Length: 184
Image (cartoon, rainbow, N blue to C red; front, top):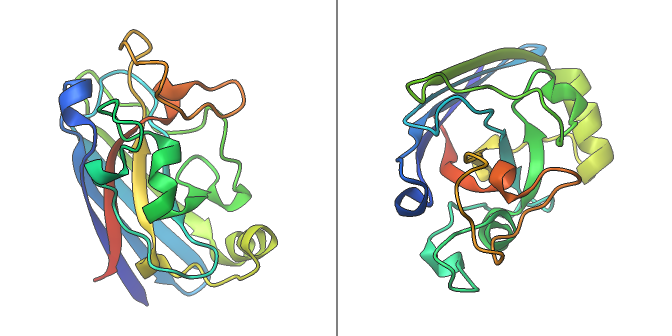
C-alpha cells in the first residue's frame, strides 16, 4: 500500500475573496486508488473542478506563485500554471478513470464553502487511460500537484484571465487552491 497527501493552500485568494484550503489523500491499495479530498472556504454553492496536474516526462511539478502571473493582471490563471505544474492529467470527478476533463461531474461546495469528495478508482483502467494520454501507466503521484478550480459567474474577471476549455470559461477553470502531492 502506498499513501500520498497534498496540503492544499489558497491561490488568487485576495482577488476571489476567500482562502480555499484543505487536503487530498491518495492511497494505492491493490487494484484501486482511493482518493479523499476535503476543502474548506471555497466559493459557496458552486461546482469545483479538481485535478492533478503534472509533466508527462516525469519532471517534478510545483505549486505556482505570483511569479507565474506573466501578464501582471493579479491573477494566476490556468495557462500561467503550466510552466511549473504541467498539464491537467486526471480529474477528481465522478469517474476519474475515464479522464474526461471538461464536464459537470465535479464536487459542489455547500453554503459554507465546504465539500468532501471520496472515490475508489479502478487502478488498471486509470493506468490504461493514463498510458494512452501520456505514454506511461506510472501515475508518479509524488511528482504531481492537485488543483481546485472555480469562482462564481458574477465575479468580475479581467479579459486577461485565460482558461477557456470548450464551453467552460475562466470562472470554471481559475485555480483557487493547489497543493504538492507528497509521499505520506
